[in-house]
View 1 (spheres, rainbow, N blue to C red):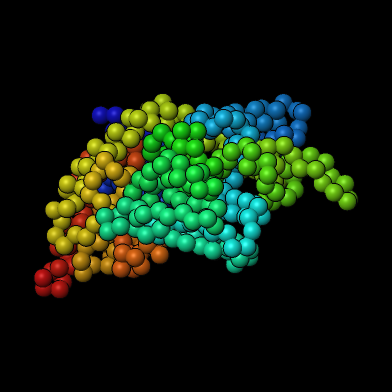
View 2: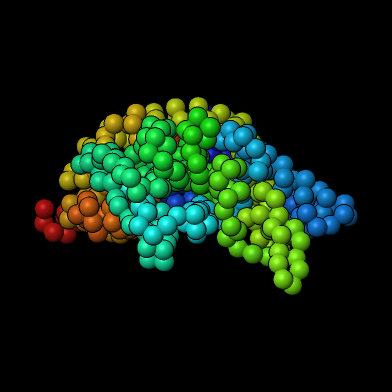
Length: 406
């Protein structure tokens, strides 16, 4: 079986905890790293560790070549028009903050920013800060009972819509291509939070016609501390730098500074070179499997998991049950059991799931819950992992219901 073979590439997953095989079901938070990525990082530190763009000696040239080679690989991966449109940041959160800070300077007081109630905090708080600073208005799109996005209404003052392509709680996949069309008809730009979508499905920024799109390396097998901002070149040219110093400079005088060309205009200081290089290795690993194969595997696994989990006593699933219309994420609660208690019992079975509000407190309030358990799957998960999850949930039910005489 392909997934069993893939799992062997991940050292973390070849461990036992509490005498059981380790099962990782928290890939929406971060993904495990294959040995191919780990070895690439090791190679960098052992063979050409140096700063980029600054030295003319051999290993600096090699590091710069690898660094920019990764940028080109990212460009192809999301089908950007130019490497000028690929900015390296430290995570998707910084990418959103960069756009919020720099693009906001092109707006005026009274302009409106449209978000949804299913957004991650990282796609809410930066806009709250900019709204307070510049006098913008924030408006939120509702979420339907089945976890899908509510009706989107633009008005004459709407200048930005910033929205997730895939919810990190509900797994809902929003039709951002259609939203982009409507946004552009209404003189509005669209920013797409693709942190949950890019690792799991083919994303083409030109097909989507996204103005900006953000994602993180650590959610797609690369190391932590590396994020990506895609932005249309004409928009990036208009924006002022987010951070200053180092590589974003072309020429400095005491009176004035000339900024570097794109994309380096937005890459101040020494970047996470290791992270950038690991990203190239991660993309090569994913493309070696095939993004379509990954998507099909996850759909099959999700369908299986949804069929099984619905049979658990007192289960509450907080999303659509249609596997064809959502990502490989299931958020759930068991009535009468706190999600942290469920996660603790699963941990004792060697199963890692996330419990809490998942950095989506407004959505939790909308769902009228304080938090949930979340199982999120990836390329290294199998139906056996799902079976173990179901067995663990049944044990949680047995323990707590027995204690309460139910």
